[in-house]
Amino acid sequence: QVQLVESGGGLVQAGGSLRLSCAASGRTFSSYTMGWFRQAPGKEREFVAAISWTGGRTLYADSVKGRFTISRDNAKNTVYLQMNSLKPEDTAVYYCGRQSGGSWWSGSSYDYWGQGTQVTVSS
View (cartoon, rainbow, N blue to C red):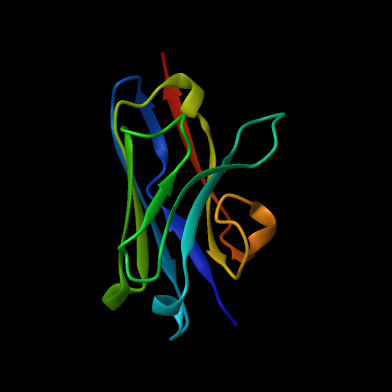
């Protein structure tokens, strides 16, 4: 059984930064692409960023490109999302997921999800 636990969310002013972490259980973490998604109230879950199992390839949504950085530490079974220059429209619950095949930007390609961590950006 795989468990993903996000942390690092909180309340921050516009222009500020946060770093989210997603700790994974299981010995196969390093074999999978991992991704971050977010869901704002009243909206569908949307893709934010993903990183290949080696960390050598990344993909970002246009809305966060240049502001967010995804990374991973396979020795610690952890994936990170560094979020800089935060905007009020970044307010959402952020989820990490394990990608099991298919498109990196599609939520249906992920088979395990964490419980989410709330990020609130005030103007």
